[in-house]
Image 1 (cartoon, rainbow, N blue to C red):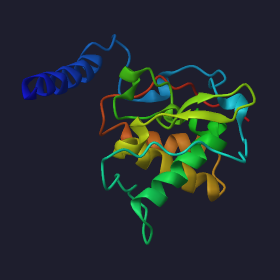
Image 2 (image 1 turned 90 degrees about the vertical axis):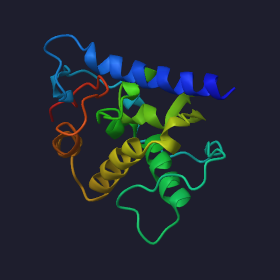
Image 3 (image 1 turned 30 degrees about the vertical axis):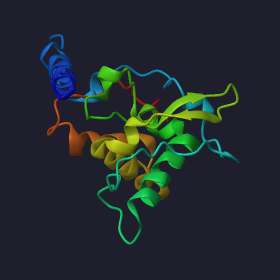
Image 4 (image 1 turned 45 degrees about the vertical axis):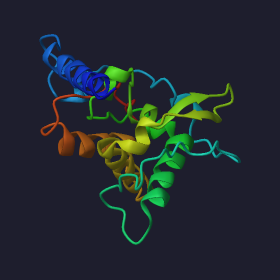
Length: 180
C-alpha cells in the first residue's frame, strides 16, 4: 500500500511539473497574457448567500493559515476566504492562482474554493483543494482584503500578479477583468 501511495504522490508531482515544462512557447509565468472576456462565474457576483454548504474540512488538522490571518483560528480564516469566494466570483474569477491547480482544470482563484453553483449562483459544492493549499488561500485572502479596502479588480489582479508571478512558474488561464 505504501508503494501505491508513493507512486501516486510522484505521479501527481510529475503531472504538475509536466504542466509547467510543457507550456507552449509564449506562455510565461505572468497570467496577464490571457485575453479580456467575462470570467466564467463573474455573472453570479456579488452574490450574498443565505445558506452555504458545510465547509470541506478533512482529517487534516490544522488547516493552513492564510498569511495575513492573525488573532483567529486557521479554520475561521479559511472559512472567511471560502465565503468571499462564494459571494464574490466577480472578483476571484479574474484573479489567477499560482499553485499549479490549472492542472485540476481551474481557470481562476474562485475555482480553488467553489466547485459547483446552482443556476441562481448559490454554491452547491465546495472545492476541497482550497482547504489544503497555502497559495490558494493566500491569493484569496489578499484579494479579499484588497477588495474590502476599496481596490478595483484590476488593482487586485495587478498586485497579486506582481507578488506571485515572479516566484511561481504555474498559473491558471485567467481572463483579464474588463476595463472600466
